[in-house]
Image 1 (spheres, rainbow, N blue to C red):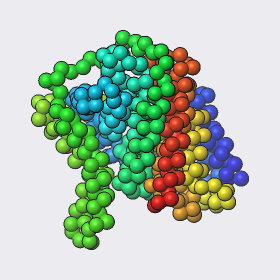
Image 2: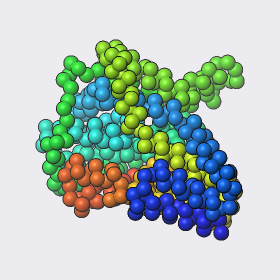
Image 3: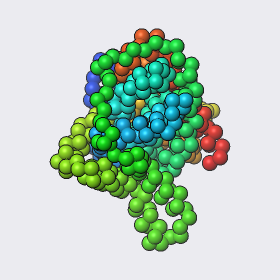
Image 4: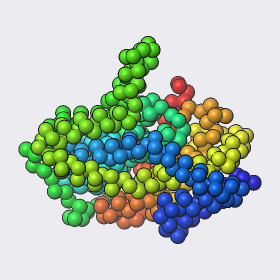
Length: 436
């Protein structure tokens, strides 16, 4: 009976968001309270669970998400993203232009929140296409595949970071495993799939042509790359070195430096100097940039908080254990199950973040019983949350309007690309499971 109640509540959440257009945060709150009531929880306990759920999840993620957004905004505003694009274009040349854009999307996509990265990077694709007289969709897919993969798979992006918290995974290992899966995935969904889209006719609107900085206003390519990639460098390095050190003060120091909160804070301070103060961007201007960054991710923070509330209701009501026991009897790999639940919610609601966080609350209890690798579960659910973007996803409409495409061509390009990423992500997770 409790499982039926939870299934109905998840359906209720989907209907609130997709049919009645209720704000996602309010939908999570309402669904959490309704679930608590029908699961027989004490009314006062419901309120406590909702507060604790929001506080616990946000408390573990707030620093990472906010500092990550600030770093991404600075990378965009300082011209570092533009420099990375133009620098890689010069290195690869016209012949390998797709690979240059793929790398640009990957490097810039790590610190930039998806919608910010899209609005910033896609107009640069238009410039490259016009200059070299190449099909716009053919070029754009490579970069957008990279942006999508980093958004769904790799910390410090909000959704995978939230999943790390939900599954009690190791953020460093998740990042390393995610990179192993992300690289072949973006190659398949980007240049290889993109080569089939050369005949799609796209005439982007003049409105979306970018205003670019002159070369003398841009930071160096080395500075841009180091500042954008420092979180990945620090997380990967400390994760790889920790097992090699004996217990002691040196290892404790490395663990401290490798803590995701410290990594993001150090990276932001570093970029504030290299991309900001060193290039004569005033502290007051940096404050404005960082304030705008927080506005950009405020909705994400609310969604994360709402997901935490629903998860806590599932745990405190005791239904999590029942779900875990019942799912244990289903003869399916728990990683596939996590991917499938996230995919169903993604197709139903449209939001990758909501799909990932909601699915995590359902499958998290199975980790203890199934002994599934929590780092791989983060990636499996993240891959599922990218499945088949269509008309209920804002990313679908961003792509359609920026590239000025018909609905048919948007489905044949954007929606198929997202589906390829999701399926390849799952395959990569299952292959990686054989060796871990």
